[in-house]
Length: 408
Ligand SMILES: Cc1cc2nc3c(=O)[nH]c(=O)nc-3n(C[C@H](O)[C@H](O)[C@H](O)COP(=O)(O)OP(=O)(O)OC[C@H]3O[C@@H](n4cnc5c(N)ncnc54)[C@H](O)[C@@H]3O)c2cc1C
Image (cartoon, rainbow, N blue to C red; front, side, top):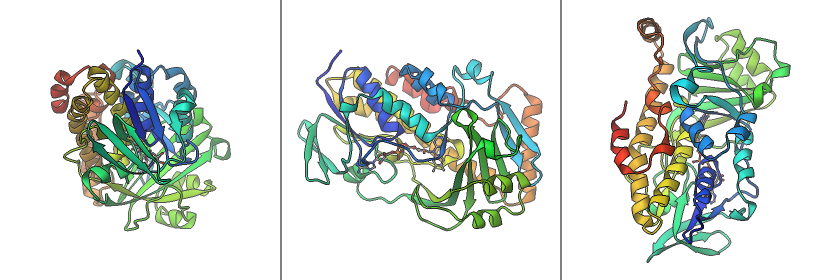
């Protein structure tokens, strides 16, 4: 059903595009404003857990998304030095039954391209950098760098960690440097020795660092990301890293890591920032979504998943109250804030657990994994059922939300 409610989505990342698609499917008059001259994503990997896959399935994009995906066999934790396996959780063939969707890994550009293709081009305004927004009576008004102003009924700030929309609503609160930097690279599989990288989503846990490896683009490329505690604060997806520095940093690690880094033609370095959970996301007809609302460390690989969930939840809330958008946005915030805050804080905690410095603490952690697996081999070792098991597409109203916040 076509509706007259106009929704401006500021930011054409994974979160903004999901929101736009879910809203268009419900007949809303949506426009996406993106600062870039074209819609795209950087060359890096991204993992989507079952909770996000359920959203893409509900959008009718399962076939397209799977054609761009790789499905890892298992989530494997390895020892940084010996490479021995500390813990394994089978994903392929198990998650579909356990969580009603699988776990997949992607080249970001491929995943983003699927969403872009599904979005009618006339819904997108490129080269549109928003500079501010305000509630004016029963409308909201957006300002852009070229001096134009746009009046609309609802504004969704999906504009990432340095969100202008958040700043307009709640003032300038710079994100927190987490003390962790990340190097990342993509390597064609054909350039690697066979079996150097297993078909798993592998996390190498070591002192002060976690390295993650997985395949993307149906197995054509290997993505790696190395998280390392270092005081270096430049935050840009496009700063090239120094391969020599990475090899020196990981010289005592398992040789497979060094081989993978050596085979990487171009690698990037950036500093990781997050934020304390915000007490409020919404004011009147304006709200936030994804990294603008809850930037988080990537140790649970859930930032994009939460942005995708947000987008769908927001569309459902507006569908419930198309004639009372301020109530819809309040309900959306009430539903999403507890869950995303919990993921933010758990991601931080996971960073500490992964990269413990003391050998004794690491030993205790690893023994703990082994004992848990021994006691209950069928159970997920890492306590993320409350994340993966959630289906935001089934949430039809706030009455289901109260149970969500307390679920474990
Ligand atoms: C190393 C690393 C690995 C990660 N791995 C994973 C993973 O495996 N799985 C996962 O779920 N998450 C992962 N994440 C997190 C994930 O990348 C983010 O949470 C996700 O991309 C956020 O999406 P978003 O749409 O909210 O914001 P963004 O992707 O930041 O998109 C924001 C968009 O808004 C546009 N924009 C910004 N300002 C303006 C403006 N003023 N006007 C108009 N447009 C504007 C930008 O150009 C951009 O297109 C990882 C993060 C890092 C750092």
